[in-house]
Length: 132
Image 1 (tube, rainbow, N blue to C red):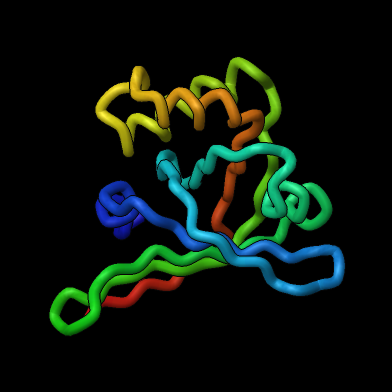
Image 2 (image 1 turned 45 degrees about the horizontal axis):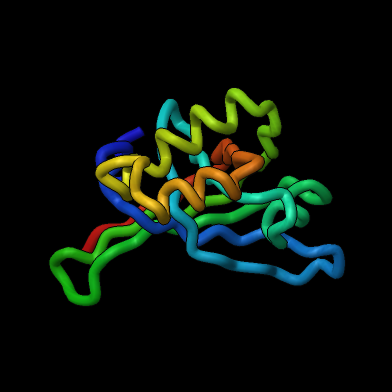
């Protein structure tokens, strides 16, 4: 994917899920992009995880810039699934958190790691990008 370098360099992804009433729910999340997929650590009690459990359709956006040149973005739609296997969750959660913390010994990193009991895996179906 030609946007791979951009997606790997950014820190915030806006994730939209659909609730049980068919209403959108959007939230900014930390993520990791690798092998054509997005990975997001979370807890099964969160609204986004509950929504994905019932409806795997998602949309997402990663963007930067407020004036040209330098306005860049990627958005898309895809399918999400919850990864619940403990070993896999812990391994992916550590990789995600190391994008944001220098060490997992940090108190906040440990709290987040302890609260993460699932990983959202997004497989993009269609992606659009822009650059101005």
